[in-house]
Amino acid sequence: MEATLTVRGLKAYYQTKHFGVDREVRAVDDISLNVRRNEVYGIAGESSSGKTTFIKVLAAAVRPPLGIVAGSVAYRFDGRTVDVAKARQAEIDAIRWSHLSYIMQGSMSVLNPVRRIGAIFDDFAARPLGLKGDAFRRTVVAHLSRLKLPAEVLRAYPHELSGGMRQRVTIGLATVCSPEFIIADEPTTALDVVVQKDVLSLIRDLQRDLGSSVVFVTHDMSVHANMAHRVGIIYAGRLVEEAPTRTLFTAPKHPYTAHLVASLPRIGDTRPRPALEGRPPNLADPPSGCRFHPRCPLAIERCRHEVPPLETVGPDHRSACWRVEDVAPLAGTIGLQEGRTA
Amino acid sequence: MFVIFRDLVRHNLEFAIGITLMGIVVAFTLLSFFSPVNPTHIFVTMPDRPPSWTHLFGTNSRGQDLFWQLTFAFRNTLMFGLTVAVISRVISITVGLLSGYLGGWVDRVLMFVNDIFVAIPTFPVLVLFYFVLRSNLDTLTLALIMAGLGWPFDARLIRSVALGLKHREFTRHAVFAGMTTRKIMFEEHLPYVMPIVFATFMANMLWSIGLEVTLAVLGFTNINVPTVGTTLYWAINHSALVVGVWWWIVIPIVFIVIMFIGLFLLAISMNEYIDPRSRLNRMGA
Image (cartoon, rainbow over all chains, first blue to last red; front, side, top):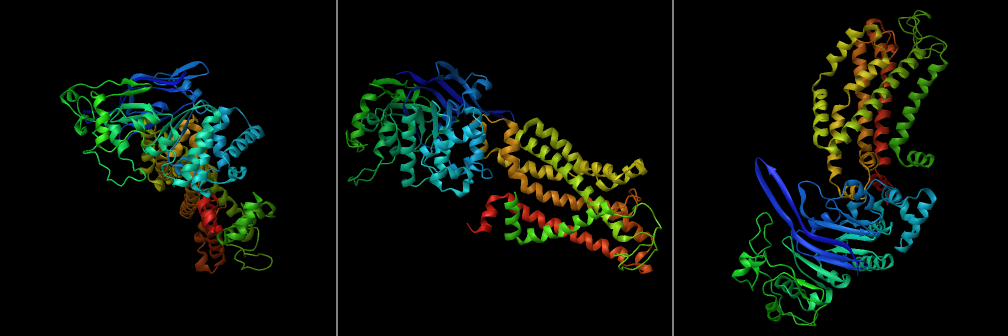
């Protein structure tokens, strides 16, 4: 399948100069991946692992002190390629919202509290859709009914809607122009599980209807298990493993992923979950070699000095570890058995 | 628009009282267009007559009918206050939003100018203008000068709000969607600062009218133009209270108090209309 998004060797650092001291935070360090057409690609990682920075770059929302140091982020829309790492602002503006859209975290703060929903739709979607007046209103109302929202919400202010409705409005806002690529940044984090389920199935249905690609970012592994076709795990600014969802949950090939999956609760299993020692590294001063080595039970001398490359270890499965073969036995010892998850 | 107005009158006591008081003042000033007398002529009636049916507010020591005299005075004062407030609001909104949202060197340059205006002492500058312009200093010129001096504090206030709005999620969302800077500032952020603008609008009117009265009482404006200030100037000049012509001072002051209370009540009830959250609060939803 053709890739809608191709990221090659992407490095994005926060660079600051204060009082003559240069600081550099390597939030995204050498990430390469593809997102295919009509695919949900999940990105998982703990806080401060660089996943927010990564999607900022994907969304072409790069502003100092963040800067792209190397690499390319190439989108393919209608047979044209746009590399947002190098493109001019006008080119980026041309694809935004109509082709590349963004569902933001926190629906309360995403909508301007002093504008009616109708005015917000007008602000966001009228220009990319190129419609005015009645035709525009009809399009919006039709789209809202797809999201099971009544046309009356257009006259409401954001605070008059419930959390779930607001999140649906946010999703509606992001999808009204039928974009080919949607970035969803923790769209369900602030919602309770019932609303979460609605919102997730809504995103999945819309994705299927529109045939768009979705990059779905959350730290919630169960959401990934439900939503994503493929999942990429980010640790300390690097992509450490990438696999189809089922493979990732049943046969991980990176010790970090193995621990992550093993930490998930399972029905009927009452054993305490082992926690991984230590904390994620400071990105301003990351460890040498493999960035996971201080916390890795499999670490050997080589991990301290050499950065493991992301290599293909199975069908559609890539992992960055020097001891890929030893991960399966480790997974057994920490309580991860093949076929029992997800 | 009419529905909003009706609901405000019905549900908002402050608005109802405020609009009534301002209605009285405005209706009074509108009478000046039907005035049978020219306000600049003096000694056209018997001076120092107490209020009666022929002279509703009495006459002053300069032989003028106080009723018609005051209609002109309040019209000029009200127009003066409105002009100052509108012009200085336009300046302060523009400066505040630009410097808060754009930041960087735009912010630094605008705030440099802003702080110079903060440091300028208003009153001596106005007295200086009077000595330079003398009889050329008409009400409009004075309004323009005061509008030019009355914006810096409010620009700082609006800037502080805009600084906060700049980092809100919905602004980032709007920027990401490719909205133009102008649209973000004047369609997304302006409704947010409107309550502040209205509150400062009234405060600014009170400030400018108060300063105009001060200048006029001291004789630093064109005293031949009837305003509230010049009315009081002449009353003091003719020792109205000592002579016993109390209506010359008491009636203008009562009207000023009515106008100030009306403006204040309108300002606070206006906020309630503009901020949808407090409006909803009142409706009990």
